Amino acid sequence: MIKNFWHRVVASQEKRAAYYMLQKLSDRQLTDIGVTRAEIKYRVYR
Image (cartoon, one colour):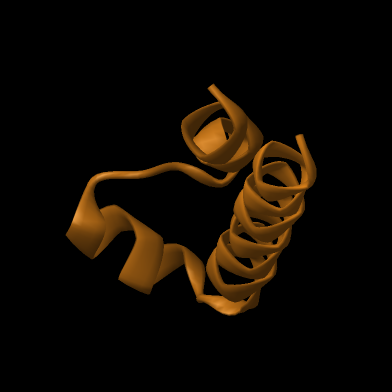
């Protein structure tokens, strides 16, 4: 039970970090990796 909770916490932190990192990229850098600024939230949290 605690292990499952911990895995969810870690996964949540990883998603938040990925979202933050993508938000910091320029529009050109996002275009290079095939993501628009409007898609960031969807791509990270789906």
